[in-house]
Image: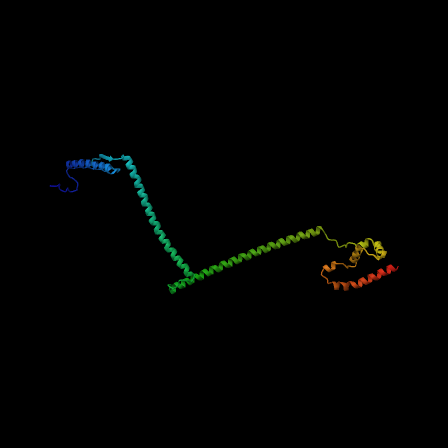
Amino acid sequence: MGRGKIEIKRIENANSRQVTFSKRRAGLLKKAQELAILCDAEVAVIIFSNTGKLFEFSSAGMKRTLSRYNKCLDSSEDAAEECKAEKQDAKELDVLKDEFAKLQKKQVRLLGKDLTGLSLKELQQLEQQLNEGLLSVKERKEQLLVEQLEQSRVQEQRAILENETLRRQVEELRCLFPQTDRAVPSYLEYYPVEKEKSLVNHGVTSPDLVSNFAFENGDSDITLHLGLPSDVYGKRKAPEREAHSNDSGSQLAL
């Protein structure tokens, strides 16, 4: 006959309970040792009796096994925290994606697109938002124009002040170097005798004297450069040339 099944519950008899504890403790420690040897596993068993007495077994040393256990426990807690944080991040990411989709859809509707699913009230709200945005844009535009106008006025005032300063400097320079109204005398005024001799001798005129003569009579190329037509200038100077030729003829006759 086989052994009957023992009901697992607290043994009320103290002697029987102590005997059972000793037998099962020895069997448990033996099984732990066999498991460590057969499977090359690190096994540790800690037992406290009801009187507080300690019984232990460790295949690789109790401190080493407990240290390894603590590290694994900490890492498992960290892994659990990381997993929890990842789940929270994924949840927040889903919320952000939903908000982004809503904002994108709202932006498309503000551009006047995808309006088929909107009711009359929603369309009125959209129209009000567009009007408010347009009003804000106009106000900002006017503000920028006013600022640019103010900058232009400041630059204009600055340019006026600079021009006034330059004008004063020019006037001061004119006061330091006044202009003389006295005309420069010609060569013939300095040497009148040489003029008469040059006109008598062999009837040959020097180019310098001719130029001086032309300068005295105002008949020079300078007038042509001033923009007067040559025919007008000739008509104006013809009487003066005739009078001068008559004077020269009288002097030669004398």
